[in-house]
Image (cartoon, rainbow, N blue to C red; front, side, top):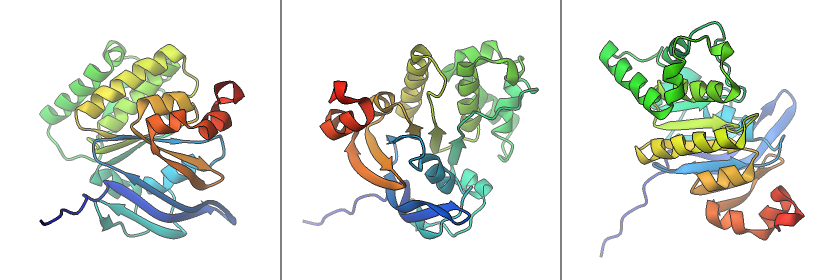
Length: 248
């Protein structure tokens, strides 16, 4: 009987080391993101999660290690625009909308590098509005006047307008009410069912593990745990470290 080789991860980082100036933040990080999955990266503030996101989106150059897309090595350094063209989109912490521009113009900025016709842009815009109906209601409103939850929807929508295969979201729930976080999670799960792969970086461990199927735990620049999200949510060590003794 002949065997079949497992399919290469969509995006993989091997032995990643990176940092700022003389300070190293990541120490030999290995992480694999697979097609069709929602993957969570969890850890406390300062664990190195955002630094790893910057590496994956080309905003920060590796000092050591390798980055692969569908099994092919990505040369370093590689500008963020070239990674965006491959299908890797990054929704940064803090949303970073253009405050004076309308919601619809903010969304269109996500498609600035695409060479597609107006009908394709309209189709993609309609997809964003279907995922986040509130944005359609606010489409002519200035981005800076939106609520925190609406701004997060707009930032995610802007990422979707780049037609990504992998959407990476840094601190999904930061500053949002539990109700809004639940609404965002439902929208992301629907997008995932439609074929979008996601990496969600999150300090709220319960939100991250309930949303995802696979998760990595990062501490002081290293991956300390990796496995199914359901198993990690039940892990006594994870519960005590990140949820407190009442949950252990």
